[in-house]
Length: 164
Image 1: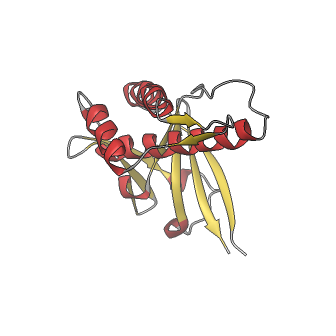
Image 2: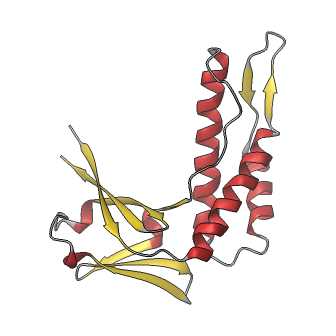
């Protein structure tokens, strides 16, 4: 059985990325919610195909100076949020539409690398990176290859690791 553990590392995140990603997710939520359809029986479902996803990605990439993968992860997280809401709604348990309230950035594995105990996160490709020295935190497991995604918050980095 695999267990996923998370560890919190204190640090200061780039405010422009955190704010930008927060706004990006809010726009994505508005756009994706336009594709929630209701059947005659009043059941909700999401009609959001590849073409609509690409159109949304292209729209969100305009004026986006950070790595493109952040746009993809924002869309994925919002699609998941909307699908979860639809399940609750169809069971009569959703009180209101979902909202984006937390300022956090999901960092996919393609956006960071670990070398000599230091994690390097791409902020702007070939321009700007965030480096965190993991060796300063003795409570972290030393098996850096098992690091999954990262969650960047304003004052900390949450590292998820798979353990078997």
